[in-house]
Amino acid sequence: MTVYRYMHIGDVDFLPELILGNRLRFKGRKEFLLADQYDCLARLAWPPAEEEFRAGLDESLRRTEKNLSAAERLTRIEQEIREIPWRTAEYCETMERRAQELVDTCGILCASETPTSLRHWDEFAGGGTGICLQLSSEGLRDQLRLPPGEFTKSRLPVAVSYVDEAGEPSSSARALELVNHFFLKKKPSFRWQQERRVVVPELLKDGKTYEDVEFEAAVLQRVILGYAMSTEREARIRELAAQRVPGLLVSRAKLTSGVVVVEA
Image (cartoon, rainbow, N blue to C red; front, side, top):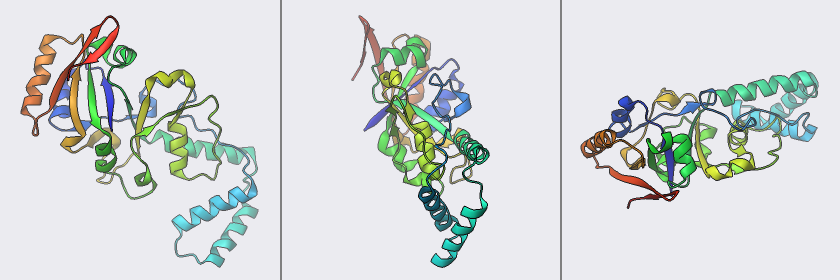
């Protein structure tokens, strides 16, 4: 499967970095426009049922304190049930704040399932003056250098769900469940975007941040030039593509009677 990343290129300085350096720039939640006010907003269902809270504590202890015996783990759970004010609104606010902090440290790469959406070209690629990257979905999933942990279990890139009411996850949900919920739920009015997202933690396996993600060359399969791109910019992109090893396919999008068609 392939996915498509529309991009405005008002500044051409990053083109060599993108085409020759195989670098994609992720953005933090606060760096891109959130037209959907609920997108990436942490809200938790509170209070959870006691059985659910116990299950969350058990899961957390199994993951963070693996040397505890079953009896020791049960003792810790009973102690925390008694001592933690987990039914109070104040505790809920604390947990929501922690969940939001987790979301805010993640990087996001937004893509679409189609390269021929006129609205995408208009809103995200400079009215056709920008580009659209064709990316290998399998490459994004397999070659992203994630640290050990729950994020490595995610299937990337993940389709966004469009729902009237996303509901609220339990406060005892695991980190990956929280991230997937807050990043992958949008209102039905955004269904036209046919969006898929790659979500990564702030720090990658090699110590770099999500702002400096380098992929294998095979991830970037093609650059589609906008139907309104200048001839000078087109020449620059084709020049860079010719220098790339392996070579990079470059196509042009055409707009005819309000319909976008991409050259083979």
